[in-house]
Figure (cartoon, one colour):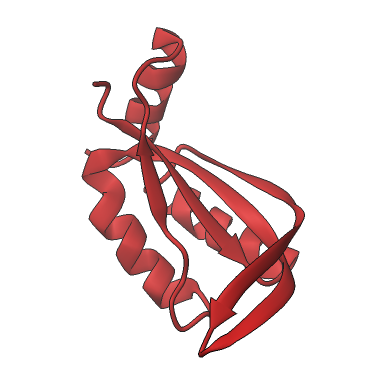
Length: 106
């Protein structure tokens, strides 16, 4: 296990996604955030099936930063319940994984 994680989140607009990404990198909670989309999202919310266009955020960070990332999303996000899903990065290019670690808070 590398201790690095890939976090997924979504935002309702490119502007909000860019704002969140900039804050996460600026606060040294993420080494990099890629913005993808818009993507089509179909989901159940308050008993109804909803459809919307969202921007997908791919957040590269460490497991150690996970609680702070969750707190930042709750602070910065306009959704009542922002998406945050983490995947452990099992392996990768050593230089890239070291860069992630060097780019975030210890």
